[in-house]
Image (tube, rainbow, N blue to C red; front, side, top):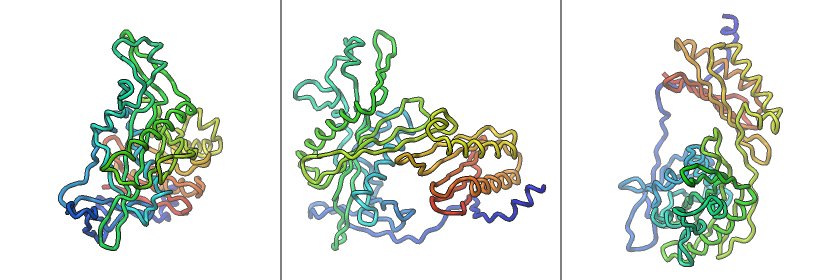
Amino acid sequence: MKKWLMLMGVVLLFTTACTPVYERTDEVVRETTDERNQDTAIVPGFAGSGDQYRVVLNEDAPKTSASRGVTTNQMNNRLDIAEFENGLKRHSKEYFPTDEYYFQLGQYLTSETLYDWLGRSSGEDGDGLNPELDEESATEEEFREAPRYISNIVEQDYLVRNDEDVVETKGITIGIALRSEYNFTVDGKDRTENHSTKELLQQGKQYAETILNRLREMEDVPDVPIMFALYEEESNESSVPGNFIAKAYTEGNSLGKFQSINEDYVLFPSDEASEDHFDDSQIFSEFRANISDYFPDFVGVIGKGFYVNDELANVKMEIPVEFNSQAEIDGFTQYVHSLVKEMFPQHYGVEVRISSLNRQESLIVRERGEEDPYVYIYD
């Protein structure tokens, strides 16, 4: 009871089974300056936080990607799928800022085109980017000498609105996903070929140059700046996603020099966290121990830290607990709130999701640079 009384002084923001209401200022615009194209689109007035893109929507129906479904069919780790697409938008902000550009799902590269490019080359005239190989008769050595490096390609379009209420594509981002682990089967036995980051960089740069040349030759693709980003996938069983390793930007027909990207996702607790990020790992361990003291029957805490240039940018944690009452949820959430405020430095963001067996119970978020976390508790 003493612990409960101490926590009553914590000020929390609660939302119970409701969604925030925002003033809508949606705008209708035309999508191109082509007089033959009278399609109209909606630019939503609300985009979330200030650093998020506003998404161009079709007025009559959702605007889907021309390559819909390719990503989920090509990438096996759902964490990689989310990071590949979201991280691509994050890196696009450097070249296509959110206060000037709108976002739209890729409209130029179709599923048919991408599956063709992601296949194996069939000779001099083949469009497949992966090395030529007859997989039906290939030996293990031949598979290892000609692995499928590239697994996925994602296109994102960035549009600008002019004085005539017309939005046009003024930038394109192309993400290239590369396999750090290539799995294949020979004589009924599963085999694996591992690829180093250096090897993936070399291959990825060659793919980017080839794709750039093809885009510039396509009549339907506008002659706009293009950003390429290379993504290194994690293994299928990984608990954290892979990361981007390099990017390049061009307004012409040559990419030039790639810029290295130093990003990494780290699991807490793990040997990697203890060895490479000892101080952060210690804070996480103490946080975990404090929760165990308060709630001895909790299942555990899993954290995923995102590092940029070897500095922790944010950490997201999951706490699954079995609760017997709403009072337990409220009290536990308040306690975790106080731990987040007291234990974690303010130079990185923190997100904690508290869940029971069947649902999420509460969410605690402290933005980078902020002192006080905010809290949502769900009925």
